[in-house]
Image (cartoon, rainbow, N blue to C red; front, side, top):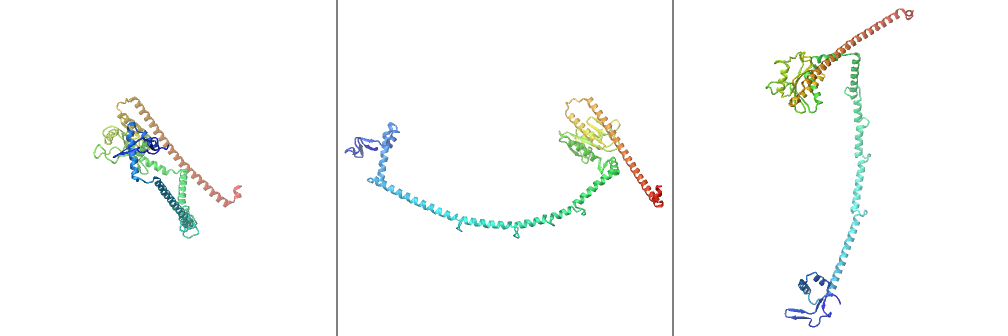
Length: 432
């Protein structure tokens, strides 16, 4: 038995198995064993299988009706098969033709023997580019890049080139502005300085010291020396700044310029500095230095004040270093030692003033001030001793120079005397 739809007991429909009553058809003993139909019915619930079977039969009936009653399905299948085979064959021939044409076209485009092919044109263009490049790089071709480069290099480093001319100019000792001539002059100057030092020529140094004693060093005022020392100290203290304020007015009055320098410390506190280069500086009173420092602190809105004197101008009780509250007096002859000590003390004093709850050991402070004063006096005494020794050495050097010249003069006189004696009496007579 084949699968499908058939009547029970026979593969063929028996007479009367399908009965038409008006608009209604009755089928008796119908059996369905088509796997597709059975599978669809098996997935449905028992109550839904009858309705599903009706829909399947309805769809099948409509399909048969749309195809036409009485059409030979085998003929249709054959015709469809023939059409599909024809279409497939035609499609294969078309694809084969297209592939063959593409292969032929591609071979022609990459055939170097075909002048119109892409590969032939690319090879021709590359050959032209290569010939042009070789021509540009050929030093034997006039105007080529290599020729121009060689000519320029020849003009720079070749004989009579720019480099040779510049070297000749730089090494020309007869040219006043040449590097070699400048080097020669520098060497001559250094030897002149060395000869001057060896010969004891101290006139320039003596003049410089004398000028410094008058408050200037090669035209630099004492205030400039103090500024240099302040900036040197500030460079060792992080965040410090030095401002010269001698020519600007402050907060005291519209015309007050008291306070030569203002040093701003790293924490924002300010120290005002006065520079004095005079023979005498009074201590107390309305015209004294303490009152002037108070006014300077007000004028420059500072927390501490320092007075730097260029000579021993303070009263004897002040000495070369002393402290009066937040005011510091120091004597610095120009080397910056006492300036650094005074600034360090003023910075510490300003810090202690800003921290009002800090307990100050007045005895320890007085002891430190006294030790600093004694050290400053010893330093000054040692400096004076060195100055005296230096002056003595300079004088001794001058004396030795005079004695040397005197000895040379005596030798010259003796030489002249011997020459005259030899000429008048003869060498043999002198020996006898």
